[in-house]
Image 1 (cartoon, one colour):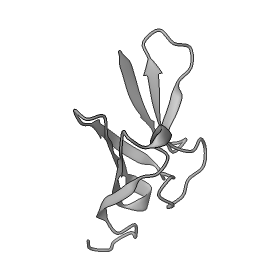
Image 2 (image 1 turned 90 degrees about the vertical axis):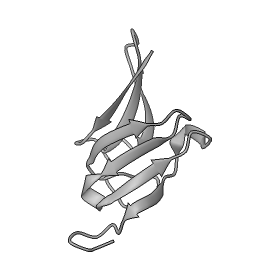
Image 3 (image 1 turned 135 degrees about the vertical axis):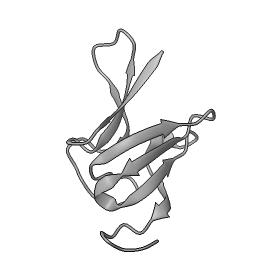
Image 4 (image 1 turned 90 degrees about the horizontal axis):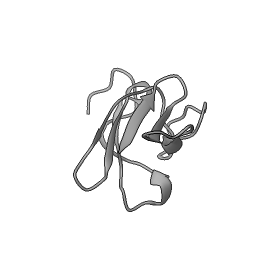
Amino acid sequence: YTLYINDFSLHTVTAWQIGATTGTIVAGMNSTQGSLPSLLYAPWDIIRDKYGNFYVSDCGNHRLQLFCATQSLFSSGTTIAGTGLAAASA
């Protein structure tokens, strides 16, 4: 089994295999916030669908990012909701 953890402070989503001593970052870059498609800023929540895609609520960027399972290490997301701007309407 794998546990997926979004780290609000480190701006990442990490996969942990049960029993492992380290995890693997699958979205974002450790301790690097940003608004580029490959970066997150204070991720709040994640959902993984039956196809292995991740939907990340990117709180600091006011957007919902989709990270497709077919991408290498989920390196780049696609904004599917939100504008990336605080107080802006979508």
